[in-house]
Image 1 (cartoon, rainbow, N blue to C red):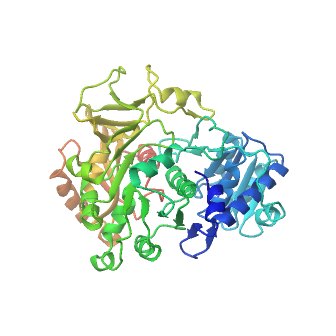
Image 2 (image 1 turned 45 degrees about the vertical axis):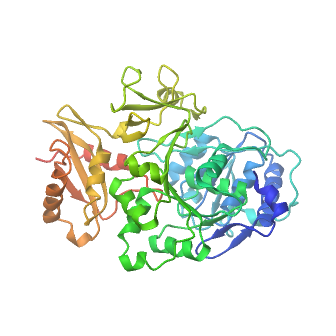
Image 3 (image 1 turned 60 degrees about the horizontal axis):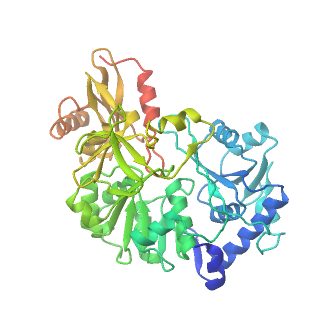
Length: 510
């Protein structure tokens, strides 16, 4: 289970293909370039256990870099390409990165880093960038054979900061062998039938955990990854047809965008090659998943997990149709729903979601946050709230940090957001609590309309009436505002904290 094996057995097989340009990198090329990169890293004095960082868009060199770092025994940090210079500097310093690789198209943030962190080893890909060494040119001078002291490395990915400053998720170093069983890869084989003939569509940024780890798993198995530089709903359908995609990974926001396409567009493309489409990252509204299954058939799988890897639940399409809204049953670690006292709650009672006896992790340089992720039993949580039914199927309520307490009643925004998305005029929505003198918090909805010209009091009144037919009065938003674009990551994660903080600092409406 490693691309180096496929470089010998199937050297001409495409390891990955860039969607917009069609640039393809074979396993032989990937192996050669990863080895050269590893030699360059060693020549720079970097050793096993060191940290390197990649601040890149979905660039043709991205996968080559991570596989070079992986065989050096590094912790490699893939950083969101959307960050400011201050945010980038924070992650570089917090992680202890000794080396940064960026690209020529990443805007001004890397230039400021060059001035602020002069001791950082800096490279650029895709051409010359002032203040940065040319990675591709220097790499090409090194042997394409393996380094003498290969050792498996591990990612250290930072949370997207939706509820606070991002924290690095650091897992224990893996066994040193490059060729070894790897949990996510095995899951891809057993749950989704992945193998050497897999052609996998990656529609999301590689700096996030699921896109990166699944793409690396496909490379471990000898399949081909088709990397979208940026998501476009119709382009994704065209890629499925053109490349005969067999597997793909999505988030609910992708599904919403796909379903908003005109019916004629949706029917234009041949999607019959697609065997498995799996999704995660956020709860999927029931009506959205029903519509996707009606369109694509019973090939849509779901899992619940996190960058930390504390535990995982999974559910297949047939199971989901009899347990609509569930994210499945535990397949790694033991699922526990706990009350405030840390004791296990009975079925159908919502509480904090914990996993017992799962893989270990810590938040880098943040022992307080690490401790907060455990309860007194040592069980670990992602910070979500939910319940299990009598059969052990998990249903998510929301993130604990986003719970609204209005008039003494606990309200979970996810249910309200799902109801909004049933309305044809709503393209996206965020629901959160804002300060209220009478209620403590009032429920606020910020809506991204399908057509911006419709935003205004009439649509707000229509949506208010619509929501009150689907949720109780206490959950119905007291305030509906409009934004042309919500602050959402391409992976589907919403930076709700930014909106909530803005409204907390604004004068209360009367």
